Amino acid sequence: MEIDAELRRQIIASLFAVGLFLVSLVAIGVVFNGADGFDPTGGFALVGALAGFVLLMAAVGFGLARADD
Image (cartoon, rainbow, N blue to C red; front, top):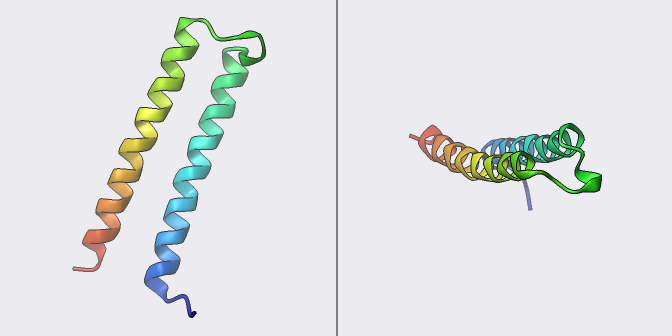
């Protein structure tokens, strides 16, 4: 199977978004000392990171779909 330019662009954009999400999870764990358990602020930060990831993936998908036009 040959990977064309459009599929390559989709893969790179998705991997970048997932990498950004993972970096944000690690950063939240470091800042809020996740090894000992989170306080409520750390929990809200995790929920915010998850919601931001969902919105980011929706925006990336919308942007890639509109790039074909």
